[in-house]
Amino acid sequence: MKRAPTASESRHMGRVAALGCVVCRNLGFGETPAQVHHIREGVGAAQRAPNWLTIPLCPMHHTGPLGYHALRAAAFERMYGATELDLLSQTLEELYGDRK
Picture 1 (cartoon, rainbow, N blue to C red):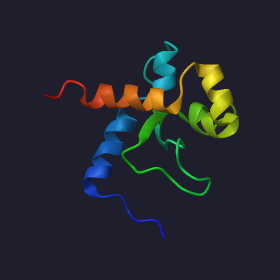
Picture 2: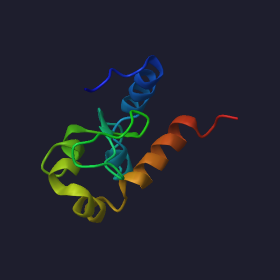
Picture 3: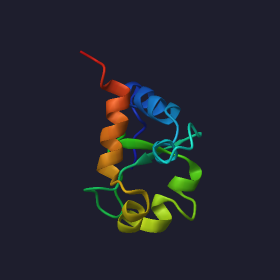
């Protein structure tokens, strides 16, 4: 049974989505509306990563024909030049990198 996100997880995922698609920004397309993608690295086929391990992807880069779920990891990485962990690191740096 899937549990509801905690308040802090919900805030974090809201901040992730508010960044706009990380792939679109990396490609120079600017800010595009994003959905939260739970990274697949290190989780089983039927499992979901924790809510803290999320990146912002627009519908095309998330579930569209050029998205992570359609292409799968290897093809997505080749097409966009970054792994999910690269994009997670970038996302966390953008959100929390200036904190002391």
